Amino acid sequence: MKRLLPLLIPLFVLLLVYLVSPLPAVQGIRKALRAEDGAALARHVDFPALQANLRAQTEDYIARQAAPGMRDNPFGAFALAVAGRMAGGLAETAATPEGVRMLMAGRVMWRKGTASGLELDKPLTTRPPEDPFRDARYRLESHDRFSAQLPNDGGMPVEVVLYRQGLKWKVGEINLGTQGPVQQP
Image (cartoon, rainbow, N blue to C red; front, side):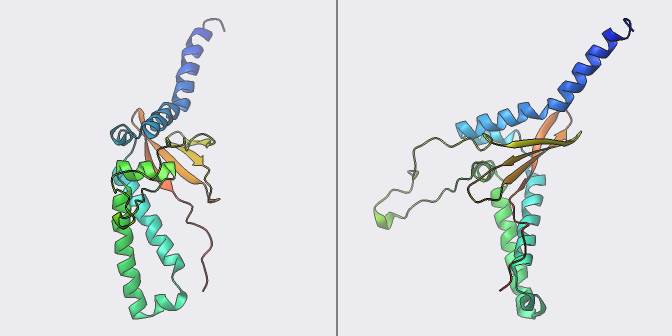
């Protein structure tokens, strides 16, 4: 038993490091969000996977919200196809460092028009961004999938899913809580 113990301790430490390894990535994401550093955030995101995830969510949401009669109507099907293409464009826009930062932080970069006398290059608020991971619930779902549920004011938490890529963890999904019940007219 004494000969086996020196071998088991390093294996246990390696297993512990392996299981906890997503947390440094989460800390890197938190730091990048706090500093509003898109380049630092980009190091923790798999943009092609995230773009596919956001596109699928938006297309599914549009299809689920469409009235049943609209799906059966040829003009309704055309409108759904156009809406799906627009949703794809929105997903491409959101799958950028700035878009990811806004999705995670729950912020929208709305600017007031110059007709009101405000300048377009000034933000509406000067307060620092809040930490979206402050009250997050973390879950290691498998050896290569880790999720964090970020609470928000809307009632539906945003789920950020990180996937292992070699020794690193990267954000591959941001689930926006659009899987709720279908709205009926």
